[in-house]
Structures are given as structure tokens and as C-alpha cells.
Image (tube, rainbow, N blue to C red; front, side):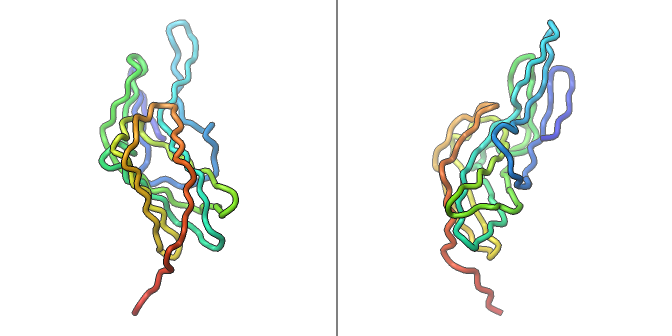
Length: 168
């Protein structure tokens, strides 16, 4: 996320359009804060959704989209380290694009940064392949995602149910 700092507040932006890159959960964005004694404290600034992704042989995914059912997902939010509180000003869904090197045997771990907050309304996940076929998964309940928390989704296995045909 990008950030600006004013006084004891840092405003971060988690983009709605994100590009997939092979990462680890250890790549958690943080802000460094110095206390009055000069001690440096690192505080996480977002939550992470972790998804082990499996894809059948010969199929390439083009995007993964999260619809957070009105909950905060991406956009601008503020962290005040004096009060250790978060506040969001914009909510939005997230679309992840790129080359997902997933296969049917070994998962590719997909990590998305999201704004800390209440995700109790669940979410919808839409995986789309390069043939323009899509698989939609819906989680009807979720929970609170605290800053620094990694929320595993469990294995997601993409199955292409029908090939895309163009009739002209």
C-alpha cells in the first residue's frame, strides 16, 4: 500500500486493482513508529487473505475478484498510532490479475492485502480463466480481520465447467 503521514496518523491506500506476484505471508506491510524513549515499534497496517489455489492442467487464470458484500476491502484508510485505531474512508472490492502459475497438484499461495475491519457479511470470490469462463464461490459469513492477521480461506480448486464459445 502507498502511505502519507500527518502527525500521529498514517493514511494508506490499498488498491482495488492488484497484480499477482509470488510472495509469502511474511511480506506484510507495516509502519515503523518511534516511541518517546526512541524505541522503534513496527505495527502491521493491513490484513492478509491467504488462498491456496489449485488449477486443472492446461487452464490459465486471468483474474481473481473479491466482492466484499459492502464491507471494506480496498481504498483509503487511516491508522492512528497514538490511539492504535483504524478508520476507513472508502470501501471497494479487489480484483487481482496476472499470471497465476497454479496447477492441480501443488498450490500457488495467493495473498491479498485488505483493510482491517469487519467482514462478517462474507464475500464472493470470482475466478476467471483466459477462455472467459468463471467459477464463483460465496462465503456467507466471515469475521473481524485485525491488522496483521492472516486469514486462510482453505483450498480453492478451480474447475472449468464449460468452454467459452463465440457465436458470430
